[in-house]
Length: 164
Image (cartoon, rainbow, N blue to C red):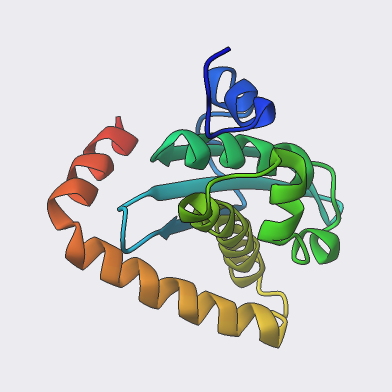
């Protein structure tokens, strides 16, 4: 048996990700990134009756980043927005099983992408945004600006691919 630093769940979702792609005319879009590794995630949601009716993602990153993005879509789909806001990286890690400590940031990115998509939806639909989500949005946007500055060439390449 070969050693793998990744759980069976991580490998399953990496090899067969679910909900990959773009939702045209999404109600909310979340874009997040990581300063150290340059991972970028985009998450798209459609909301009906205050629930996440559809959710898709595009991720440029490592095995864990791709897998947890897919897992997150399954965790969040069908949830009411007030429930989805509470989804954390720990919820994702419960589903994924253990990951190497250096990869925990991927689960944080996935949760951040969801929260950004919900923030975007609430903003576009002129609904009130919880204070905790406003503060999280500010932190996420500051990090994303640093990622785009530090990894400018890489993120420009990703932008071109995402627009195709």
